[in-house]
Image 1: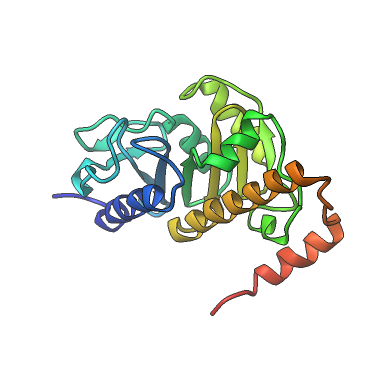
Image 2: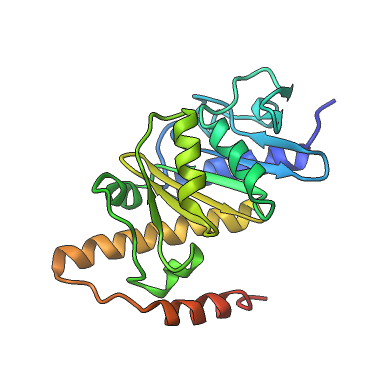
Length: 213
């Protein structure tokens, strides 16, 4: 009997959306959902293409990284997911992408400032975590130390991590920050972007909390 069926199905659904939304290619990136009540995490399997992944391929682990259910290896970035869930109780989902523009910015070792108000999906800016080898404890530590209270962080020479309360909301963060990354890159190639002040971004973030139905 499979556990966390809803979370497994969400991983499969949004994994496919990573590809169709051009946020990664092949089996790149990863995503997970935390069930706080059960103390368990559903995470995408390592090295499997998203359109080949079935709900039974999703791996269930605890906060110590022990596999509770599943015959696949969990994502190589499991340690980063676990540390984010451990350190921030407001996080219930993590999405890691290799989206082209966010990754380009990360490879330039830039941050993403408030070039557009939609950066508010992450915070007043998107910080850059120092480079470390993928899947390493050092990378997990760099991510947690850099992301602070925001909802996204760039990984130097690697990609982007977005976090949130639900997988749907977290996926939206990854999409919006990819858009802002593209705007920022294009604006810099055309000239000198005008950056919104922190006070305006504070107003934007406050309005975003009430946005929608």
